[in-house]
Structures are given as C-alpha cells and as structure tokens.
Amino acid sequence: MNISVKSPRGRAALMVMHCAGMVDLVALSVWVGALISAYGFDAQQAGGLPTLFLSGAVVSSITLAPRIQKLPGRWVACIGFAVAALAFLMASTTGAYALLAGLHALAGLAVGAALSVTHGTIARSANPHRLFAVVGVALGVFAVIFLGAAPQLIAAQGGPALFHTFAGIMALGALAALLAFPSASSPALEKVQDAAHVSSLPKVVWFGIVGIACMTLIQAMIFSFLESVGIYRGFEREAVNGVLIALGLVNLLPAALAAMLEKRIMPRRVLMTGPALQVALATLIMVSPTFGPYAVAASLFAAVMIFTHTFAFGLLARLDTSGRALAATPAMLMIGSALGPFLGGTLIELAGYGSLALTAACLGAVAIFCFSRLPAGSAHP
Picture 1 (cartoon, one colour):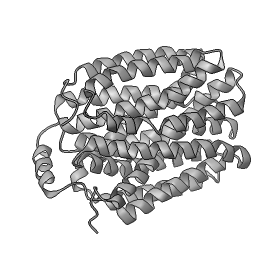
Picture 2 (cartoon, one colour):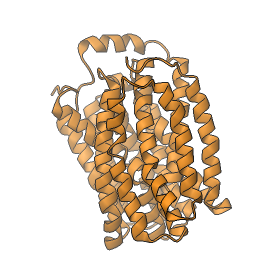
Picture 3 (cartoon, helix red, strand yellow):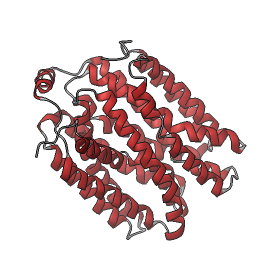
Picture 4 (cartoon, one colour):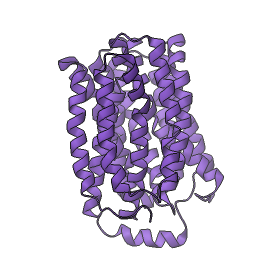
C-alpha cells in the first residue's frame, strides 16, 4: 500500500497520529489534576507519572531517529500506538503508584516510537512547515474536544476515565497508521535526503533543538499545574474548566496562522519572540491573584508554543534535509516535557507556585540565546 503524503487520506492519518502522539501538549493539566484529585497523589507524585511517560518517549525517539529512513513507518506507528492503548487500559484498573509508573513508562516508549516515524514523514515532505501547520490545526480541534469533555468525564466517572480516554485516543492512532500511513516523499526528494543522510547534522541544528527543549520544559512545567494553581488561588472550578475550554478554542488559531504567515515572517524573528512571550504568560498564570489576568494568560499559553514550534519545524527541516533531526521531534519536545511535571511539582512543594515563574524566566533566556544562533534565513524555502 503506497499512500501519498499529499493525499487527503495520508494527511488525515498524519493528523490523527500527531494528535495521539502529542496528547501531552493538550492533556497535561487535566492529567496531573486528575492524579491529584482522583488518586490523592501530591504534586510531586502526580507530576512524576507524566514525566515517566514523556521520558519513555524521549528514549525511544532518540534511539529511532537516526534510523528513520530505514524503519517501516506504518508498522512502527501502528504497533506503538496499540501498545500504548493497552498500557493505558491496564492503568485504568489500578491505583497502585508503582504499577502506574511502569505502565506510564511503557506507554511513553511506545508513543515515542510511533510519533518519531510520524514526524519523520512530515519532515521529509515537500513543504514541512505547511504540513506541520496542517497537523497543528488538527491538534487544535482535538484540544477543544478533549478539554471540553475530559474534565467533566473524569468528574462523573472518576480517575479511570482519564486512562480510558487515553486508551481510546491511542487506539485511533493505531488504526490510522494501519489503514493510511503515507510514504515520506517523492523519489526525487528521497535522493536529496539520502545524500544528506550520509553527512553529520549541521551544528547549528543543535541550537534549535536545545531552544525548543527549553520552551517545552516551560510549557510542561506551567501547563501541568495550570488547573491546580487556579484552584489554589480560590477560583471556582467551573471557571477554571471554562479557561481550559477557551484554551482549546484559541489553539485552533496558531497553526493556521503560522501557515498563512510562512512566507511573510522570518522564522528566527518568531523564535526570538516566542520564549519571551511564553515567559510573560507563565508569570501571569503563576502569580496573578485575580482571575482575569490568569484566564487570559492561560487561554493563550499553549498557542505560543504551537505557533513558535511550527516555524522552528520548518526552519530545522531546511537546515537538515535528511529528516533525522525532526524525526527526533518527540525527543526535543518531550525531553523538556518529561522534566516539566516533576520539576514543577518539586518546586511547588519546596517554594510554592511563584517559583515556577522565576524558573521559566531562566529557561526562556537560554531559549532566546539558542535561537539567536540560528541563521536569519528567509521566510520561506
């Protein structure tokens, strides 16, 4: 079965697989919140479980990314998402922390493998920026559905509903991979990529990878406790849930906007601005004593990451045409995300929610420095 990445069927499969693999970007706040409220774990314990999931994803992504052109993408994605679905289904049957920890790590290993071949395929398409924007729009739609339904479902049915939901999402990812995983690119483009594959990664690419990892660490650290800090400040739970729905609606816009502006804004300009805006919003979320600034900042927070990363993806794809760097997208995203929930929970236990804002500012400065090392380039290939 040879399905083109340009076909509606192939793009639909990539959308579903991207949403399944990037579930943490949408679900971390609900995930950690449910582990605290439904299972009784403290902030550090609750943050530790998604950290194990994301750490597993990092390990498998780093392992597979250098071999991306030799892997059978359909079967790696299908089996990876299927194993993750089974792991989450098993997680719904227990409240034992040690068992939950093992199952989270297993699910992460499986999802990291599946997402690596998904992003490697996008990276080797004719226009990686635009295709990544397309799957980003799908992630925004998914966020609206998930954030609108999951908190209510968990409140009504308890903690296991979270893992039932994750299992269903992963099963859809496995089905999409089985039925419509697309081929990476045209034969002509494959020749260019094969030639690039024999050389080492450009050194400048590593600055982009570190910068994105810093941004995702901020994203995960703040987003994991977005719900709990609102409750801690005394905001009504219904109002906080409303903010999550608003966040999902806002997330419909950044990827589409990034696609529209692809040829109008230099990528490095976006990358230099993104971390600063992210830090400003993180500070408002964590220190605002009133609901209004918290709500506005929380609603916009994830959108900054989605918009910035779309430009980063396109720029890194042009700097490394082999697709190896972007096949490691789960690693560069999740190495930050993996540390975020646990680091955030630890800081909260030691120094309160305000310490997360200061940590975000330090990480944002590192990200800006790294992005400043990237070539200014042009707005488009």
